[in-house]
Image 1 (cartoon, rainbow, N blue to C red):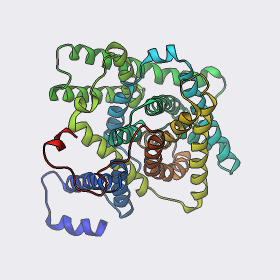
Image 2 (cartoon, helix red, strand yellow):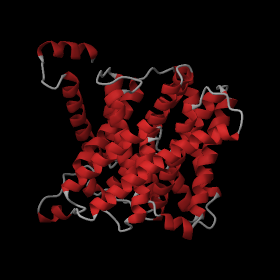
Image 3 (cartoon, rainbow, N blue to C red):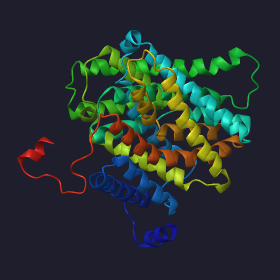
Image 4 (tube, rainbow, N blue to C red):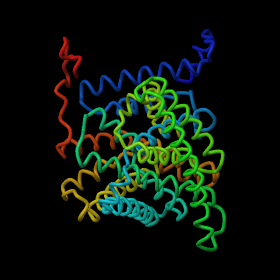
Length: 419
């Protein structure tokens, strides 16, 4: 592909630059692939987005490089921030007051995942610092992939809601711990204060920025129509500003957006039509995010020697999440079968995990590449396979149905408009 682009660049002189043309065409192909794949196989569109991104990365697409930096890194952070703001808007803190076992379930599955992956990799000979970092990365599920799966399959029910909330909370823990750990990776730790201080700084800065974002949006929604396109532009613009400010002040941009969504939900508890409010611009941004994640993960240097470590990480992670959800399921309001499918639905890894790898890579030039060599193949595998597993889990839980239009032409006539 690099040779083809070089020949193309000799006679093509677009005003916005050749990379802009490349990305525009890549997103167009990804959108078409996602639509066709869902229409003919019933799998979520994100599988098509990831497949096209991975194919482009493996064939030498030169639109971005690894490690991410500059505009590509900001776009990834912005896409994650938009998704996490939406995910935070689904978390009602009153639920934890009436059903605290859900919070215990979340802590149990997240901690068990981190410890299980860490000790499994250490047992296989991985350096302790690298194994610890990979354990923290594995802790995070993917609200981005899961929310797209839910949207594409029309899933609804207790398993769907529980999986979305647990995925969001695990992401909150991972963002906080990794942001703090990456900043002090090479500092000698002598006491509890040196360990807790970075966590408090990341949480404090992100909370303040997220609270300001929520208050500004709350005031704006008092005078603006929620479903207006101007409201969509306001939401995305303010989330982008908050993400940039949080990162500059030492917090976490995605974490600030997530906290902002949670706080706004408490200030404005009425259900919102998030896809309509965030608009087509957010959909394009999220599609770009999925393509970028798979492209970068496929384009990064791969080491065949770590294939066993990648397989171990993936299997131990899935098993730990299943065990954690089941162990703390008693009194949480779901039966054991529903808890099993909830754990399966939390299998995907995607953009959040890639951002966490980027943070470790930026903080250490020696340990970062070792972490990335194991994490990137796992992310690429679980962005695709995890979406399929989550789709199957929601179907087996009885909360989504097999699409009736798979392999057939879309419906025509007045009745089609209601679908």
